[in-house]
Figure 1: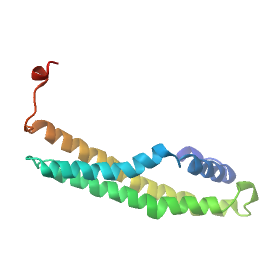
Figure 2 (figure 1 turned 180 degrees about the vertical axis):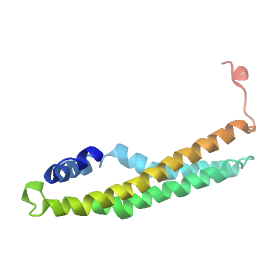
Figure 3 (figure 1 turned 180 degrees about the horizontal axis):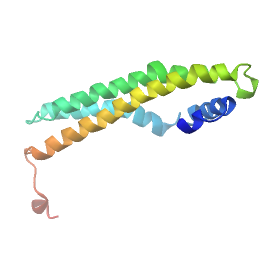
Figure 4 (figure 1 turned 90 degrees about the horizontal axis):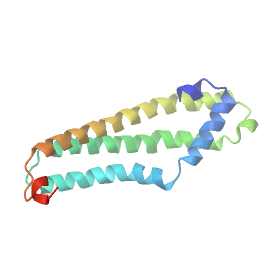
Length: 147
């Protein structure tokens, strides 16, 4: 976004309209929807295990994942839709106004989303580190497995 922010109004609007169309693909949707779902699955598995030490980090990760999801749904996507509904950049009468209405709010909410998802990563790494130190019932060592 810093590079696009340096471009002229029409270029920014055109580029973001194209980015918003290109991002709508199965890989994006799988990661966007899968992250909170898989974090919830990890929490359920952790709560069912004998060791619950990592559960609080997984729960924090789930909360942050949902925050990132909700931020995207409530702010970024509506801003993307408004930008798309403005029409072709060459036909927008006030392209500078469209850019101004889009850019700063979108960047601000994208920072919130980036901080939330970075927090998810940190929480899940902390959970993995705790889990790695916990004895796992029925687990066999690499030597016992023949590795």
